[in-house]
Image (tube, rainbow, N blue to C red; front, side, top):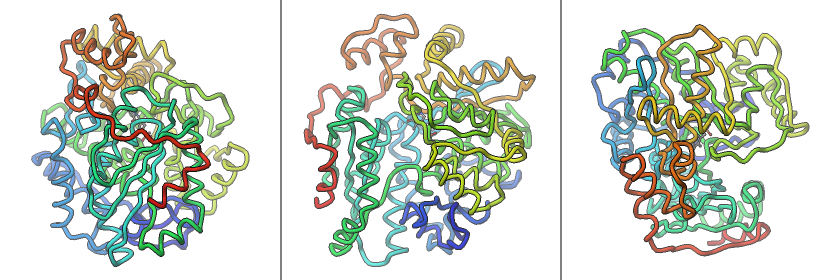
Length: 494
Ligand SMILES: *Cc1c(COP(=O)(O)O)cnc(C)c1O
C-alpha cells in the first residue's frame, strides 16, 4: 500500500512517510493509491468482534507491512488508545425511533468525536516518524484551535515520549468550558497559549510557522521537526473509517438489517474529515446508499453539492455549533481528487483557484456523480434548537447542537425525497459541552455561568454530566500565557 498526493501524481511514499510528514511538499494531501476492499464476508466476521478487534482488522489494510507496521504493533497502539473511553463499546449505537439510529462518538476523554482519532494519532505519529525518518527525532506538534481539536490533541499527546505539543487558542474565541478544558491540561510536554486575537489570527500564525524554512532548519539542528494534529494528516482519517464499519456491524448484530442491506449516514460536517472517512468506508465496500452532508448556516458545502460551485466568498456566521463554523473544508480536496479519477493536475488547479479567487466550479458530469453518492442540507439556528427540543420531547434523546444539525437535515431530506432507507446520524459531541444552548432549546432556564449550566442541564435532563466535564470548575489552572500573533513563532524555541 503506497500513498500519493492530491496535487502531484509523482509522489510515492509509504504510510509511515505520509503520517510523519502530514502534508505533501506540493501542498497536497496524502491518500492511499488504491482503496482496500472489504467483503461482506469480512463484515459479517467483524460483527462478532468488539471495537478494538474491528479497528485492528480495518486499520491493518491501510497501515501495512510495507509501511513498517506489524499486526502486533497495531494491536498495541489500538488497544491502548481506546481504553480511555467511558463507554466500553467505544462508539455505541442508539436507537432513534423505528428507522434511525445515533452513533455516539463522544465517550472519549474530551467528550467530542475528535478523540476517536486523536487518542490513536500520537502513537501512530511517533512510530511513523521513527520508521520514516530514522533516529530518535523529537516531534513538535503545533495546533491552532477554535475549541475541540486543541483539547483532544492535548489529551492525546500528553506525556507521549518524543513529543511536545503547543496549542494556540484565541483568547476570546472559545467558550468558558472549552477554555477551562485546555488551560487545566496536565502533562509534562504540553503548552497552551492564548493568542490575543481571533481564530484566524491563531491559524494564520501557525501556518506561517510551518511555511518558515528558517524555523524548520533551526529545529532540525536540534534533532526536532514540526507536525500537525489536524485532519489533513492521514493518520487522523484512517481511524475514523473504523466507526462507520463498526456501526454497520452493530446493526447486523442487532438484526436491524440483513447482510448487504444499504444504510444512509448523516454527518455534521465542518472540515469534511468525518464524512470523508464514511466515503472511504463506502468505497471499500460497506453498503451505504447516501452520505448526507449536514451543515449549519455556513452552508458552503450544501451549495457546492447543489450547484457544483464552491464559493467561500460569503459572510461568516458564528453559530451554536461552532466546530462547524468553517468556510474552507480542507478534506473536500481528497474527495475531488477521487471523483476526478485521480487527476492530480485537475485537483491542483481547483485548489489554486480557491487560493486565488476563493471559488472554483467542477464540471457537470463530476457534479452528477457526486450527487449520486451525496445529499446535502443545512440548518439555521432556530431549526437547530427545534431539532434538540423535538428529539428531547418525542424520543427522550438529549442531543448536542452539532448532532441536532444532522437530525434536522435528515428530517428535511426525508420530507423532500422518498428515500426511507434506515439512517445512522453521527453524534459528534456530548450535549454537556454546549450546555447553555441545549438548556435554552429544551425550554429550561439558562444560568449565566457556563459551569452552573452543566449542573442545570444535569438536573433538567436527569442525565449525569460526563466525568471529564464535571470536575472542570475546580481544576487548577496551569496555563495563563498569552501572546500577540506576531510573537507566536518564539514558542517553537521551547
Ligand atoms: C470537528 C467537529 C465537527 C466537524 O467535523 P469535520 O471532520 O471537520 O467535518 C463536528 N462536530 C464537532 C462537535 C466537532 O468537534
